Length: 237
Image (cartoon, rainbow, N blue to C red; front, side):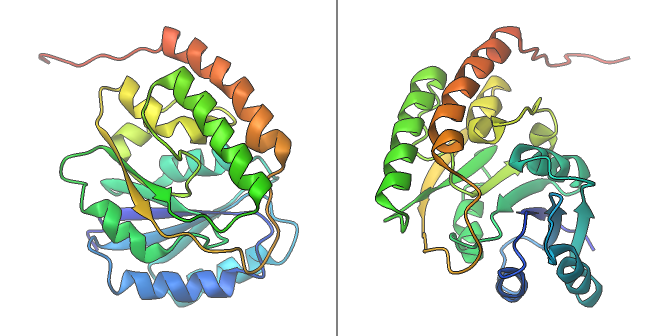
């Protein structure tokens, strides 16, 4: 069907959100600037998420899924989405829908010039503690990577699939996607997107994985940057 964009939706115990996800993504598919399909990645949910995902995918051709044997984490879910994507572009959004699917159209406006476009959450509707820890973590990460990005934790991004597939993922690396595209000599862009309060389900993040964990990941990124292999082929016979 000549799809141009695959949107990954990582899912972990989001049964209360999935009906809303289905309806809002269907609405987005009707207005998307690129022909789009949806890929749920069920990260070992222990609730009824898998049953709901299978029902959604049975009823709508543009929706597909993969399901992990056990919970592996957000970075693994995103990597699996990259691995299974077969479209020129890949994006992702969280199942809590604190960002709006329609804002993918904002990101797509820059797809002709950039290899990764990420949202920056405007007027964030999170708690003071969550916002402050995110601000600190982004500042630390930006000092390590010099990627110029203000909000790499924003769950609304698009990436050229061929470049996404080359990213050597590890747990926590989803926060470093812009920096990893820069290592491939790619061009990156950030642009404001809307943000909303979580209306159902429970956040999977705490102070450790929002602040202290990313600090550890910065050192892992520096090691990877030093060892990273990047080449371009001049001729082939």
